[in-house]
Figure 1 (cartoon, rainbow, N blue to C red):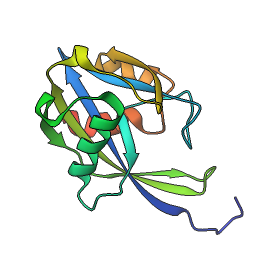
Figure 2 (cartoon, helix red, strand yellow; figure 1 turned 135 degrees about the vertical axis):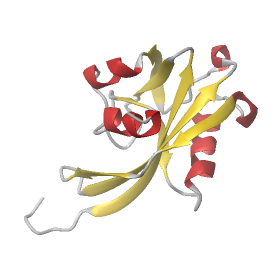
Figure 3 (cartoon, rainbow, N blue to C red; figure 1 turned 180 degrees about the vertical axis):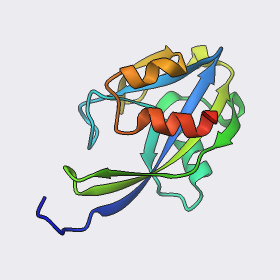
Figure 4 (cartoon, helix red, strand yellow; figure 1 turned 90 degrees about the vertical axis):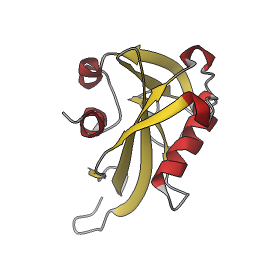
Length: 141
């Protein structure tokens, strides 16, 4: 990207689902627009003016879980994550939800694999930028 060019501010939500002390990470498919093959929380572009409503929508779409299967635990402070290689400044709105009915999760086309991991394992995985930092904001660490 040429020096001095402004990064495009792009707002996204990331929902971390927690069950039995572990968080759900999803491996992004080759059909998504960025970070294919990387691990992420349930995520998507902020299209709804209310980030929480967008997070719930993404959970329904990407996991098949309905609103009655998730309970909001916390909403983190939005993080600014520069991605000059994409010309973007991601503004990530992170959320943490506790999940019931985790066995009912069904992935859509956006992700190819789901894995429950301990929060301290997140940083060691090849994830989207600032994944561990986003998780830390909702866990209060």
